[in-house]
Image (cartoon, rainbow, N blue to C red):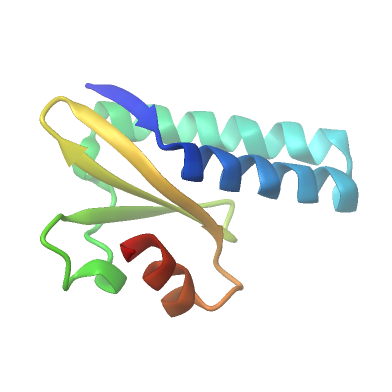
Length: 104
């Protein structure tokens, strides 16, 4: 399996990393990025590790999600031998609004 990040998910993840850097410093940002890489590797090895996300149950595509560091959600879908990371957001924000933006 291979992993591909959408430009949207990539941008969202780096915005969160930048926020962490400004609030908590370089060490914490590095830890966060390490957690993202680790989780991505876990998904690559076991693509169904994340449950189907209920925010997207009305979609024709199964979107799965995993929580990173307790505060961020990585949304992904599987298509053949490729795993697409489609969104990445802070779980403290309104999830329905974020899901609606992604569905458009």
